[in-house]
Image (tube, rainbow over all chains, first blue to last red; front, side, top):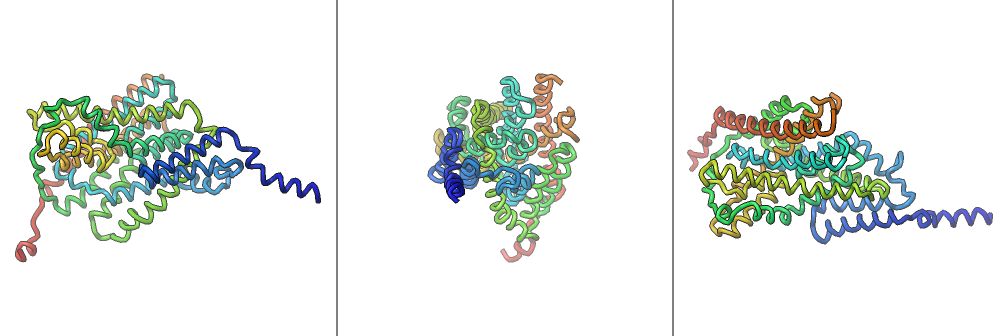
Length: 382
Length: 48
């Protein structure tokens, strides 16, 4: 009886006895993510569950990610199978209005330039000694698109999922701080003052809006088949939005499904941040490279904007090139604010929205192209 | 395949491929718009 009492009492202290400095640091990092989400409002929908997941998984002996553990169940079902990010993509498609892009399709090229940071960061990651597929996962932070980053990293480098996701979502929320200094550094005051004419609001027929997601799915998926799940889910959501005949499904995609999946996905990502896997010098490198990737996207976008400015005889304000990333509509708003600082009569918002919508498609297409090239090179299976 | 062959191949084809696919998509959008131009709703015009 006495030994049973001692053993029972010891059980109460097992957690304390197994608490290491790594657990404490990770619990603090999880708390920091909660602080950023709750007090600073940085991507709270993701950072709150990620922060809480990070705390839960670092409670000694909690076994959240052990075989049969509470979060492991959802991780195996939704992250390992890549289903969660794809379900979120349906919601994103249902929420996205591609009208600015349909009105001004040529500006989609800025959405391509805004993805070049991905590929330059890939080379940097390889130069720093990362494994090929790890470098691919790191570089995709430059897509500035959370679900795409999660999809690619869970496919190729699941051990980096936590670092890649935290970097992607943190930097996305910091776009208003990251982009303006780069914009100012790469443009002259005269360029920033360029007034672009009012967007010619060309009405778009309903048929065009309906055919657009179907045509993009078929066309882009045939060109980059490995990216069909990414392209197809975004476009399915958009088709539901524009068709107007499945309001219940559209509503469920952008509300209930997106909310539930966001919660579970966040918890799962947080739960990959176990002390022994996360507290490595490599994680700091991933965070640094993610920052470089998003900065390079902005820089290349602006340089492309400068080229378009030169080619059109000064009719395009190069600042809109910065909006060719996937952070929608945040990046377009940053461009508008920056343009107005130098010329109060400058309304770049609608032009920037077109580039930003191009960036949304661009990030998905860039990931799809990357997956297909990897398949072509035999790095990943067909 | 060595690391740098891999890196440069993926970077160059990736950038070129992304640009190409998006350019083709812009042409596709123009084509769809041409085939299905906006036509004002006749009933709305009557009411107006």
